[in-house]
Length: 329
Image 1 (cartoon, rainbow, N blue to C red):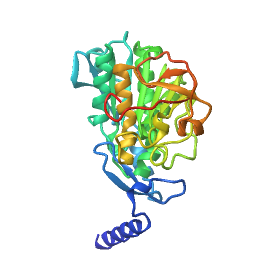
Image 2 (cartoon, rainbow, N blue to C red):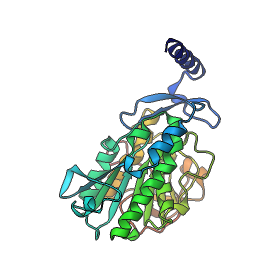
Image 3 (cartoon, helix red, strand yellow):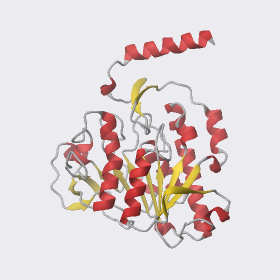
């Protein structure tokens, strides 16, 4: 044990010497970088070469019920009812209404079902409309090391997709499904949509995570749902930069959000903008010719709303909107 602790301290010291500035962000190929947890925005030093715990991922994802699925409705906006895959009575005896839109929320790394993101979005969706909100809590895996959580994201997403498919068998329609995820959760809901055969009406990824997502085919893609929207708020450091949806929004150019002094703040703005637009539907973005124009504030195309709760959006392209510093932005 002593030798293990000494080795850990040595690795930490080495990491600190390689990367001293938490504001320097992540660039492809970096071994060490800082990434915030969903729970408190605390920056954590990540070693990109930390071994992935494949055994734990396989054990956790083997049973989708290792995730928690918490239902909130206008009848129970604050106290969740737990739904369990394969247990029809858990749904039939709950406040779940098959005739209503169902919004699924997925947190990111070091997050949980009761974090700020889920609270803001649950409140916004229920205030805006009489819907079902189902919060996915995958915190047992999400609170492992970043490399392990990242590697397990797609499989958790497939589990969520299986849960959606099961609800459809019970009577839900894909036409009333909206999958929303933040950071790692942005890629997670993409994989969930893929598991449904891309039949979910809308998939929304809120600043999907960038580090270690530049390879492979498991990141969010526009083929993951009938309509896929991405809101990029920290492309220079923590978020996925490339356009990958039907519609990709780069508010304020995609990085350095007004009123923010840290990367974690800009990263979190994605779900804050989403919650605000669900309530107010007020952030109209201009179409851009490409990402370069969006980053340089040279977009003058026709406008379309960013975010909101509309399941039948159809506008595709790259867009920019300039926001305010404070809520409702």
